[in-house]
Image 1 (tube, protein in one colour):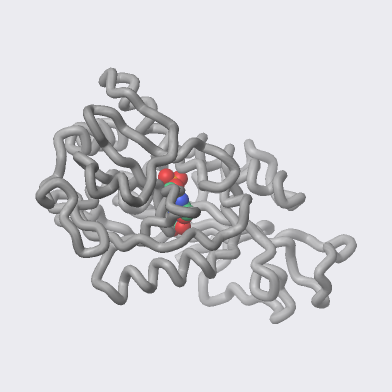
Image 2 (tube, rainbow, N blue to C red):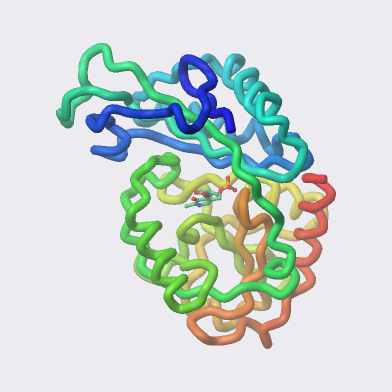
Length: 277
Ligand code: PDD
């Protein structure tokens, strides 16, 4: 149970922060969730690159160079003797200082990263899950993986209260992504998803989906679809580091194409397994 910090490894029970911590008071920080299969990171380059892009975007000084970051993340798995499936949660905040909106002078970033067990959601992936639709009330810079997750948390809670796995978010009817995953619609053999603009998170698994579709000559159309398009969809699915490739078979109480998991979703699930395994 060792946690990586900006200075050293500490036991999780020995990690404490001052109450004036900018992550706590302002959500002034960024994070990543990285998947581990059989003790090895999956899509590590994509996650590290995105982390540094997020840091740049919010003028956050990273405590490690990219090279050191890779070494420290490897050391985290080794120190905890991870050999199975897991996920690493990592966050970096602007640091601890007396509360002031503007960045305090000489403040030092706080980093922590730790490993959690995570088994694959085999039943859900086989059968598919249900979702609700909700307005996307987030800010314009969702490509930054920021700690400010209140709109995401509320949308996910509403899904959960209705016995659903996810909330599909839309801006004026145009589907952006889900509360903690990217979303795709299949129609007439083509995969549609919102373009990787500033208003969605550029998912690491999304990047793989694009590649898998190219490999299989399935058109990958980066154009937003609308909430009302969902009723005519052949297939719907979402992706994330924790949910992998997850079929959505019901939206707002209505079945998507008879509630069956479609063949393109199955193909992409299979490609993911091969890639991650
Ligand atoms: N969430 N969109 C949002 C809003 C997300 O929070 C996530 C990931 C994704 C998918 O990104 P990736 O394929 O890189 O995991 C898309 C993580 C898993 C989380 O917050 O727990």
